[in-house]
Image 1 (cartoon, rainbow, N blue to C red):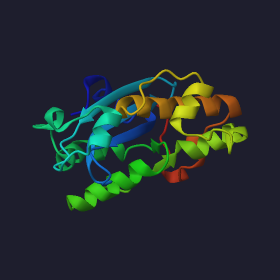
Image 2 (cartoon, one colour):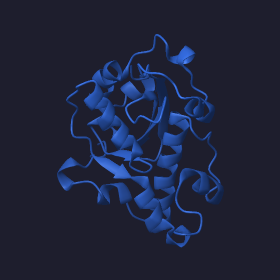
Image 3 (cartoon, helix red, strand yellow):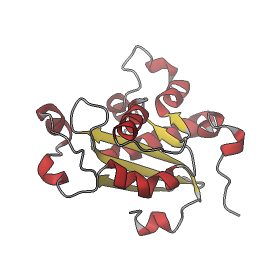
Image 4 (cartoon, rainbow, N blue to C red):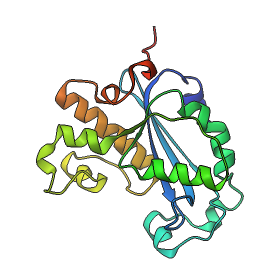
Length: 196
């Protein structure tokens, strides 16, 4: 289920940015997952997968991200997707923009009675606040505002695109502050090691 360019370099990523889209207001109703895999040189490999949420879609959500039941019928469900991707996700820190993605994964794991690894979650909103504190109360640090302020190019509410945007936010914040911010939020014993 991993794209060839990602599978060939598993274990060589510094962090992976992750995003989900949901079919409804229920956190477990994941219908798309997106990954932006960042290596130790700042290169980003991005991919996304449609997921059958096994529930009804809400019109609001479909209008937001453009995904409908017709598109996800026949796609693997969350359990099948995570069977393949959880071991990969456990190899490095997982960057999410806000804490919604972590809550959605936990809710879906509970729904499917999955025992997932303890992923290392890092919040790129926290990282953005460190780099640009002047936007607290002045537009904030949501992806829509950061897109405008940082001139990011991405299609909002597509899981792969949003994951890539979160990765870019982290890299720009680290460039501005001249330090590794993902590692600062990662337990030392679990930090990814650069390739030899």
